[in-house]
Image (cartoon, helix red, strand yellow):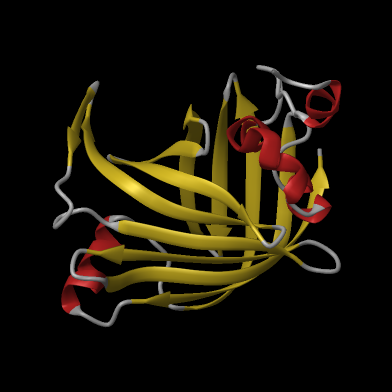
Length: 195
């Protein structure tokens, strides 16, 4: 039986709530305000800052980065634009002249689905020490309406952490391809504004 005390502390995100508030549910309040600000409290939010991009040194990593039109290794002025489209969020990350656009939707509590070109990832989203951590759980190859699951030995892996700074947030994301080889990673600092 629930008491009045437990009902008072329960966070219920509405359908109109921002994506990450819905995904994290009761844990949303555990995340720093600066991080919450980056996760679309209105229709659009933008981040400006810089990012250090690293890429894998293998020939395969270099070929995949070019095929996927990912940024080359280097330090970039960077922007992130997040806009709401129905229950989804469209994230456009720009590193110099390179644009990485993904669409994120809630898959279930604690999990988002992020689509990038012809790849789709199920990503666990959890609070950790007032930050948010990201860890991919599954990957699919998309061909039109078909989603072909990739076996574990073929699937890329995404790991990341977003933490608060005095004026914005710090982001650290790595993408590995099979056999735990780095495809691309970036570390950045962003200051956010609602538009």
